[in-house]
Length: 469
Image 1 (cartoon, rainbow, N blue to C red):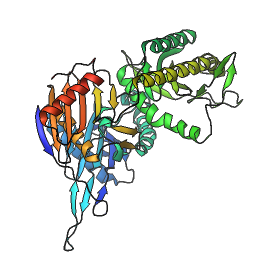
Image 2 (image 1 turned 45 degrees about the vertical axis):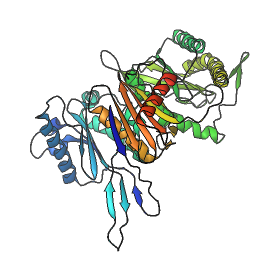
Image 3 (image 1 turned 180 degrees about the horizontal axis):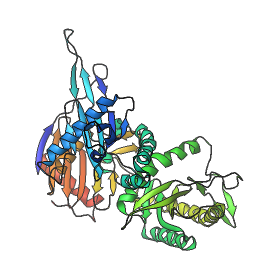
Image 4 (image 1 turned 135 degrees about the vertical axis):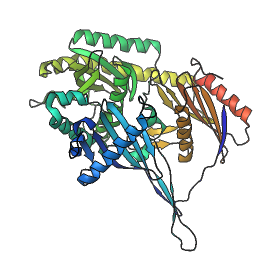
């Protein structure tokens, strides 16, 4: 167990200027594409920003190549993952053999004024960033299909749009984990959902995989964890928010039920046709690539929603998804999903009434399980791609990030306790591929009392999870 003291500087906005982290450059290269002198530009498959002068691009890529090769001399199987300087951070990721992705981020900084007219003092800080891809398969697959030209086109089409959605200023520990939030459900309702998935997959034979979500939280998935992790990120940070805004504005409202037999039907497609009754409706669905035992499998992604419940149906890309198939899916899934959404909501409200009114706890926590990617946070009041609204001071969030970095350096289980100067205690526990971060506001507590409080938290919130003492 490690114990540390940390100070929180509550900066005054009038006296200091704060600058958030920002993306300086992002590029992808393959050293095999330009091995000879004079061919260096051929290595570069994508570079952002595009207006950077050619020689500077070549210099930056060459520097990254040199760093990677240099670090291989110390550990051939584990080259450098990042380079930290005072002003910037560079992140290196070999997504496939010889395909390198590099992100350069300007560290956040605080500009503090000095007395006597002296220039302000600039203090640089640090953050963590992650990035993922879903819709284009592997680099090798694109290269084999159409050479460097097709690969470059796919990279430009995806990354120019994707990089605009990066909001580095809102990234925190949950972005480092990239986990999945699971919806708590009783056994009977869970069995209803499992039965629903089985019936649909039996009735609609082209459906290969299914995922079921409620309130942006996962309940059921037939995908492998790594694929579901990326799909979950796309759904919760891109697709669902795009459709939530029109609903709140009164457009495309799901609360306009149709009656199918004796059942209410609130269902609608989030991908594919916006209106099945439109004679000019388009039956085009986004395609995704999932990792199977043999290779990457290309699939249509159908996302269908009724009230707060959403289902993802994944169908082999070779299948023609026409009007007849979509009408069959709509008539089959719509009424059942509407009823399920109502059942889940009712059961959730019953459980809340039984548990009684929530009291403001003396602690807040973030939990992550590396084995099933489950995450839970009582620190975040709202977490989207562009907003991270937390109930604690940003400097406390930074302490959580520092503890996480310490955990990442060692494989053994450990515990770290930090006493902040503002009477907060911050505790990190790493045990059996699980991580728990707790923030306690107990002014006069000592180390023993803090440890006992964390034990009580583990007993009440994680009674079925084994944490080493």
